Image (cartoon, rainbow, N blue to C red; front, side):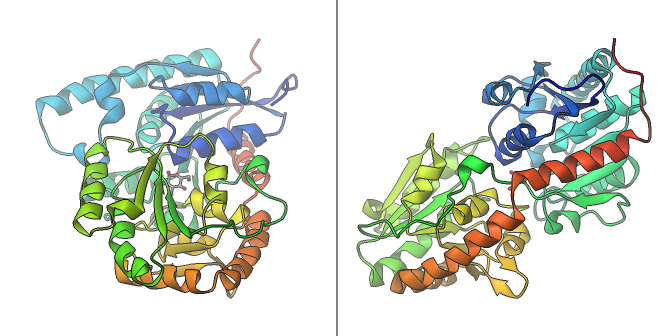
Length: 398
Ligand code: GLC
């Protein structure tokens, strides 16, 4: 962003983690696409790679370090009573106080929260400061994703707390019944991620790739289990899992590896780890697989594959089902979640007739360019900010 004008709308974005997960990458792209009538600052409760990424698109970031136990507590570990929870409560109170102080000094028109923990902490701090709040939901608030008591509490909070809620898909939006001001803002791809024209099929043996952090929710295990059936028909195929284990999923990497060994496909399965250039990694694929066994809230990598013209096979659930359907048309192959046999059959169908799959991918490319441009995301989100801030403006900062 360039220098904002004299009295821009001031937005304070609150996130809890500075690791580069999907929600954080979406935030960087959004910030880079915002117009000049906005003064956006970010506060994070931990330091990490997100800080530099945001700085790189001109966004000032303040880190208010919270107790690491509060920042890293998993979605499943926040219920129950223990000394650890008491300690977390103390850390929560301190984090809310620090956020209130950040609100006092930056005097935003709107507080915008981007992660589940930030929704709760940011809402408390903003409410105590009398500033309107927008939640941007990147997670489905559903019992297959979060502990039941957390689902109930978040749904109640969503109805009463924030002035407006943004959801990353219809699938996410439908997990919040009764929220009055609810808008879908699909996370968009950045211009540099897309190819203007889908390329030719890369030469050499087929590469079936899954791009995403190594996690049971992303389905690397299902892909490994589909491998033997694919190899029976296309023995040269290589399976490549691209992405580092994140958010404490190191054990899962070992499970995936062991399963590949047990099925006798270890020499065909590559755990490629983190890649600096995901677009180049996508370009090398014959087919991009999205195998999440649980419904994915959105599924940015599916859009990223589409804007590179790469054929997609994905599980038919959550936001991904929305991405891969445009009107009556289907823009890739959809399979039931958690079904390695169906996954294998769909991959085989692509490899049996790559030109046909590339033709579908060309339609997917056109559709994604039209529907998921980050400029549209920025317009939708900033319209919600302006509308929400209109409910309470504070005098300009001097
Ligand atoms: C989260 C969701 C993912 C989504 C991303 C951006 O990482 O798990 O589905 O694509 O946020 O909204």
